[in-house]
Length: 376
Ligand code: PLP
Image (cartoon, rainbow, N blue to C red):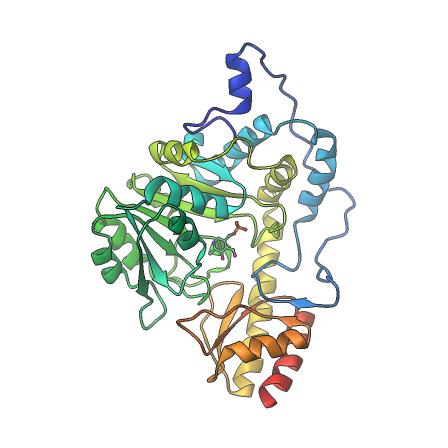
């Protein structure tokens, strides 16, 4: 982990010892003659994987070039590159560098937040269903976990979460929410942030930020300035197509960044991921193309499902929750037997099937298998 938070970085530590460390320039992040990666989705063993909300088109061409150029740096610790990425992210979000912490995927940010702010007498409040990872992390701190069912529109029920937040260490809000792909309206989220006790931290997970197109959605990163108890997490795993590289980050006020960093390990983010991320940030076209492809393929799938008479939760993400009107569990198994991997069971919604929006070809394969399975 680079020098920012409470943790001392390897480089700063070396400097303290008088060793210093030579700075080397960041790799040239220039796209060469790379074929655009996602023309055809990456193939993996004939299995159509629609289970993990990955981006089937992969990283941007510029990111692939940057990683190749970073091969020569693999022997170095990533400190100064991490600092450069933090500066890029700070610029991207219009904040100072001491408001950004990078992690080994946004999963690491979630873990740091649970470690820093939950414990035997500091409960975690979260929605149900939502992305479960933070509950596993809070379990390790022996925190009580309070699950508040989503409201009738599949938004976070923020008035109930506010009641539950009394005495809580951390409230987790996933927006857009996984697995429902639904959003929590911006006015409700603003009011919640104004009302929640200052002693309770709020982590808003914006992993699917880029896919949300509703006018009711907004990122709360600009609200970090007036809210010392707000942490926002983002990831390079979704729109940037870098799930295997592992890189996420938090934006929060310096005291929170410091506290999160105290729980982290040094240099948890590798130099390849950093190189790819820096190049990705500069490739706005890749983001725009990813959004367009997702929007179009999702609309096509919804159209097909409409024709087949299936309802689904309106999606503001790169996945869709389809109401099967029957138990999803055997359907998950039957789809797997047809080499189509779909989302897991989410207990509060036992009749819903979560499908990642893949390429049009992958969705055709899904629809063919789905029709067979549901007709059986
Ligand atoms: N947050 C949400 C809502 C997710 O759905 C996921 C993964 O699917 C993550 C965080 C973890 O992402 P990563 O650790 O790859 O950044």
